[in-house]
Amino acid sequence: MNDNINGENGDNLVHDNMNDASPEHDNNEHDMDEIEYDEMDLTPYEEDDDATLHKKLCAAKVARKRAEEDLKLLCNRIGLLKMEEGKVVKKIDETRKRANQIVSQRQRNMMNQAAKEERHRKIAMDEAMKRQMNRNMKQNVNDTVAQSKMNALQKQKQMALETKAEKMAVKQRNLEQRTNEQMRATQMKQMIQSQKMHAA
Image 1 (spheres, helix red, strand yellow):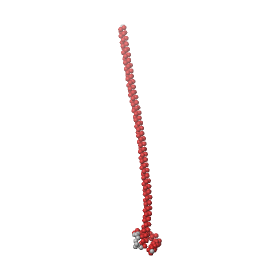
Image 2 (cartoon, one colour):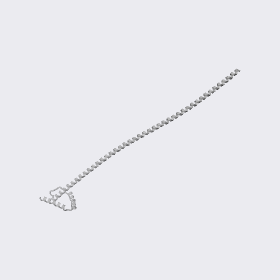
Image 3 (tube, one colour):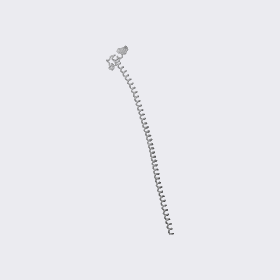
Image 4 (cartoon, one colour):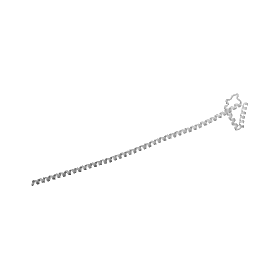
C-alpha cells in the first residue's frame, strides 16, 4: 500500500514539476527524457523502485506514442506513395494513349501521303501518255502530209513526163505525117511529069 501511495505521490510530483516548468525547460527536459527513454531498458524487474518503474512506464508510453506516430507517418507516407503511384500510372496511361495517338496519326499521315503520291504518279503517267499520244498523232500527221506531198510530187512529175512524151509523140506523128505528105506530093508530081513526058 505504501508503494501505491509512493507511486501516486511520485506521479503527482512529476506532473507538478512538469506544470511548474517553463516551456523551454519542458522541451529541454522532454528531449533529455526521450534520449534517456531511448537508452532505457523497459523490462520491469523486482528490484526496481517506484521511480524506476514509473520511468519505465513513461518510457513505454513514449515508445508506444512514438510507434503510433511512426505508424501514422508510415501510413501517410504509404498513402502519398499510393497517390504518387496513381499519378504515375495515370501519367503512363496518358503517355501511352498519346503515343498511340501519335503513332496512329503518323500511320494515317503516311497512308495519306502514299495515296497522294500515288495520285500524283497516276496523273503524271496519264499526262505522259497523253503527251506521247499527241507526239505520235503529230508524227503520224506529219508523216501523212509528207507522204501526200511526196505522192503529189511524184504524180506531178509522172504527169509531166507523160505530157512531154505525149507531146513528143504528137510531134513525131505530125513530122511523119508531113513527111508522108511530102513524099506523096513528090511522087504525085513525078507521076504527072512522067505522064506528060509520055504524052508528048
